[in-house]
Length: 391
Image 1 (tube, one colour):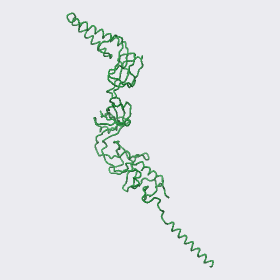
Image 2: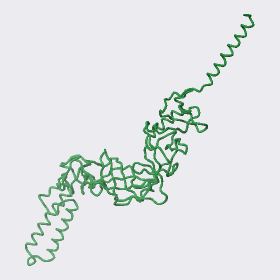
Image 3: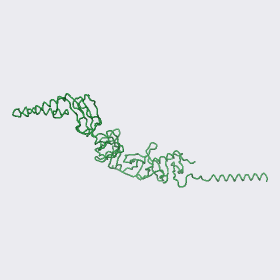
Image 4: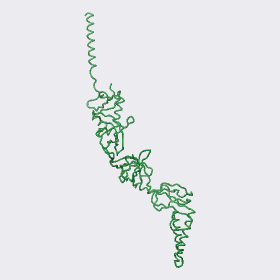
């Protein structure tokens, strides 16, 4: 075989090898996902969705998930329903002592504390002794009352035959004046014992001692509070609501108070006729029976109020679980006409039980993610980061 013939055969073999190599490269790559497996697709908003991986370079703003993928991720969708922003409104509340069942125990004259009979936190019955004090003014009032009583008994026993009518009238007036003075000092209207100046402050009603602000031997001025006595069988709860919502809470309606896992029923007494300049909130006051002593002044609770329907077009509402935070905004995942999910910024309104009124961003009939919104957010963030990229 000549050298030229050998060279020609080598050229033919090289050309055949090149053709085979080009044919192999032109075959499409096989998908790594098994047939029938749930697949999430993400797209950037320009061009076709990238199946089987996330379109990270474009910053995905939409994501597709088939029915199997949604079920596997625990994601559920539902249409947005239009409902009157009412039925039940949730608000923060603060427990207050019932002012109608609260009494400040104070002396009415300058006094010195001799001894106490109860302590902070004690429960007392009506009429129970609280503290014993002494006072010079009280001693004078006691002596005056005894003298007036004795004079009245004397002239009354003699009768009008022996005593002039004017003398009897003067004795009666002196007795009435002495009794009035004794009552003004917090003493009984009848003399008892000697004129020692000692007197005892008693509980005007049953309750608990919630303040104890003195020591034995202290000089107490008139009006100075020694004890605060509170009947805790009933408490008040002040719920703070937006001014526009307060008008839909009627007096006499039912309210539910949630504190420490317990649910207590109350009744709306009234709503405030003044709006806070700082918060633009108004107060609704609720009366709550407190038989189990669960609530105490200063406690913070959660309040659910029955509200009347407001006028105008009903506003859409979504479950609280449908909302997540993204890029500093509150968003809800809405399914578009092509079946893709996109995060839609919304402006929220009142909280109505387990749902929130949406003022802007959604309309009735929109299909949104109501369960699994955090999982949907995670899928979108993965798409934006480019995780699972197959190239």
